[in-house]
Structure formats: C-alpha cells, structure tokens
Length: 311
Length: 314
Image 1 (cartoon, rainbow over the protein chains, first blue to last red):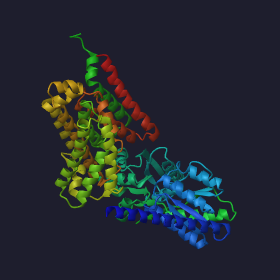
Image 2 (image 1 turned 120 degrees about the horizontal axis):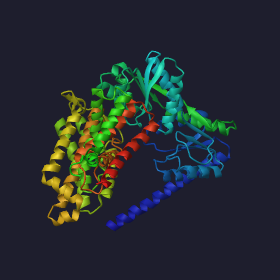
Image 3 (image 1 turned 135 degrees about the vertical axis):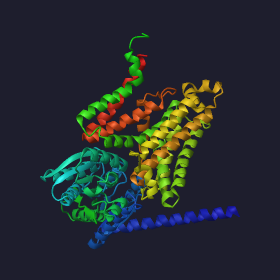
Image 4 (image 1 turned 180 degrees about the vertical axis):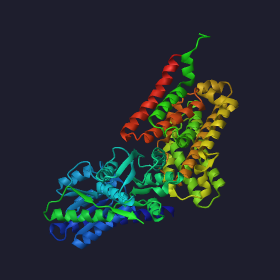
C-alpha cells in the first residue's frame, strides 16, 4: 500500500515537473519570437525579494509604466538568494529580452550575471542597488543627497529660519551616511543663521542615538532641531529628549519612513521623515530602459526624488 | 623594600583608577560640562548596560571561559519580554520570563561546554548566531515598540535623584562581589580558572560551577536588555550587536586575564566606566566620528599596556 502510494507520488512529481518545464519553455520561445519580430519590447525585471513591501511597490511601479508604454515586463523574484538570481537572469537572457532591469540581491554576487547579459548584447540597468562590475547602462536609485537637502530645508523652515541644529550621522564611510550628510550640510552651510553645533555618529542605531543625543543635550543647552541620517537614530534621540524634558523645544527629522517613525509623525512627536519612492524607482527604471532602446542617450545615474512624510 | 614607598605596587593596585582620575581631570579642563552632576549621571547610566553584561562576563572569564552570545541573548530576551508585555502579561511576570529565557540560553551554553565538551569560544559562538536568528524570526525582523508605562520605569525612573538602572547595576555588583569573595561558588570559580584539572582533583564540582557561571551570564545579559528596552520604549532584534566585544574589553581593561583565575568585579566596573567616559567625552567635545574610533582604540590599548607593564614589574 505504502509502496503504491510512493510510486504514485513520484509519478505525480515527474508529470508536474514536465508541465512546469514545458510551460516555461513555451513562454521563453514566445518572448524570444516577439523580440525577434520587433513586436512589443520585452523588458526583464529581476527583483531581489518580493517578500519586502518596498520591492513589491517597486515592481508595481515598473508594471504600471510598462503597461502605459505598451512594453511587456517579465518579472522574476530572487527571494534574496544570489543563486536563484543567477539562474533567473540566465532564463531572462535565454528568452531574449530586449533589456534587463536588475535589482541585485548583492552588488558583488550579481556581477557574473551582468557580464553574461553583456556577452549576449542585452543592455543592463540596475535599480535601487548597484552592481560592482560588468557594464551597466544606467543606475536608477533614490537620490540620498537630495533627501538630505530636503530634510535640511524642512528643518530650517520648522525652526523659523535660524537656530542651532544637530546632525546624527550614520556609520562613517557608508554611502547612505555620506550622501545624506552631504545634502544636509550643503543646505545648512548656505543658510546664514543656522549653525550645526554637534555632528556625531550614532551608527544608524537606536540605542546609540539615545546615548549620543543624551550627551549632546548635556553639552548644548540650546538645540532647536536635529536631523538623523536614519529613523532608528532619530527615534533614540527623541527618547533621550523626552527623558530630559526638552523634546517640545526641538524639531526632529528622520530618514527612511520606517513604521515606528511614521507612527511617531502621526503622534506629532517626530516632525518629519524622508521617504524613498519605490514605485517611482521602478517606473523610472522601465522608462529609462525604453528611452535607451529607442536609441536615445541616457545618463549613467538616474536619481529618483524622495518625498517628505509630515503630519 | 619593606619600608620604602613602593610606587610600583601602588600603581599595580590602583593603576586604572589613577588613569581614570587623570583622564577625568583633563576632560574637566576641556569642557566644564563634563563634571556637571547631570553629565556624571548620564555617563553612569550609559555605562550600566555594558557594566551589567561585563559583570557576568567577568565570572565567565575568571573560569577561563568566554561568552560570545551575550549580545544576541540580550536581543532575544528583549524581544520576548517586549512581546509578552504587549500581550498583556503583568510586568513582574514578563521580567521573570525574560530573565528566565536568558538563564536558559546560559544553561544551554553551560551544558554544551561541560557535557558536550565544546570549547567555550565555539559553543557560545554558535549560541550567538542561534539566538540572533531566533530574535529575528521571533520579531519578524521588526522592532516591538510601545510598552506599558510600568515597565518603562525600569529604565526611566529615579530613586533619590539617581536613575534606577544605576541602582540595579550597584545591586548586581554588590551581589557579584559577595559571591566571589564570600561564597563557595566564588572560590570554585577562581580555582577552576587557575586549573580546571587541579580543581577537579580536589573534589570541586567543576561542571555544575561552570554551568552556573554561564547561567548567570545569560540572565545578566537579559537584565541589561530590559534596561535598554525600557529606556527606548522598544525592543529590536538587531540590538546588542557586538556587545560581547565591549563587555570583554571592559573585563580585560579591568585587569582580568583571559587565561582565567585572575581579576575581579571592581576592575571590570572601572573598565566599563572608562569606556563610557570616552564615548561621552567624544560627544561632549564634538570630536569627529572618524577620529573618535582612533581615540577609543588607543585608550583601550593604553589601558592594557598599563596592566602588561605593571605585571612584568611584579
């Protein structure tokens, strides 16, 4: 009885396996044919994981723009696994897509896949996360410098145009810390009357945000505003200021729009947090690829604007 | 030699204390804020988490062991405590659950080391990864924010003008010193560290004493995690990263030998205090984050050199 069952099960597996293989092959052939017949353009999008709402929104934005432009979009999900990503991209190359949009699981691990696409003559675009090798036509990602500038402008307005501000920096040397800090400092240094009284790192970490800001509160009797390179640090700083009874004198601005920070904005404790626009990233990815395929030049870096979450 | 003033001996005994006094004096000259009462309280408050973890680590290191799992255990017990609190479990019971979870991880560490014969470094390295993974899966990678006010008092209230975490730390160190100096377990711990074999031959229950030490270390990591959670009103599965290294640094700066049998809680407290002083001074003086790490590393190395040299003079 048990033996019959196991034979049945294995038979089922084999049959369904064939069905799968056949299905994907068919899809592959049809896509390749379409590309060859110069019908609608086919763009492959490899997403690092669709388990994260950020990337689901990115895909939706890409899909919407593709539909609008009459382009076929083939989406594959790497499930955060570089090996799966490599075979997914190989499949897309096999299908003969006209362009590849890759949101890599890892900037290094994706390099061989990019090179394989280069060899096949398929233009590659990276979205959100870059690739550390191979030929990439353009990189489409959030403009962290602009985000830092946006935060600075908001903060300066909120403190009435002049005053003393604090910058809580991310892990020294990381690109996010560098770019967000650059944008913030660009604006603040150009604004007379606004002074950065302390610029200290709290390593993108909530606990360190708490302790570091507690120390800065001690050193600086007057603080009007604080900008942190991410929300974790600003939430720690907020906790420190509330414990010291100075939260109502200070304007807090964070970055990333994580759930806790958005809740704090709704409660009126946090003034604002800078949010990335994943939908916009996906959309610009597709339109950039189409522009390029139509024979026009595109910039090698396409910065995607950010938005400000306020009450 | 017997009657002359022996500077070497004085330095050996109080070297770290003298170094801290000199540092504090210098910092007070650089910034008047540094010795303000509020800043001293801030500094002690910021030292508490590392100090409490380092107290457990001291006992472990005295037995010639090491506990790399404390940072992850802190995160795991913090998310468990926060989660049961949000589920409406009374504060006292939630605290007991959290401390119990820490003790259980310590028990597993101890059993892996004694019965499983896995070297402490490897056993606790495994637990470090395991507990971090459990914390991340338990919390689904997200922070657990918004805890009952009564629990927050653990981190935010004060007694006689001194923040509660400082009192908790004082109790931990008082109890720890009592255990080390006045109890059988204390004598066992030093004996095991000096020579585990000799200890076994003299009839000391090496296994149960070793397990006890790791259980204490796990429970103290959980306690430190609760203080952090209460101060932040949030528990995060990524909290406590590299805390094991800070705790080991505090213990070693405090004069304990990684080979076991030598050191004590007084030194460890000074080690944790020194590290908090440096971090605090960097913020107060607004020193560039790039330079800050150079300073932190240098001060730790200088403190270790101090011990090395005074030992050689012995």
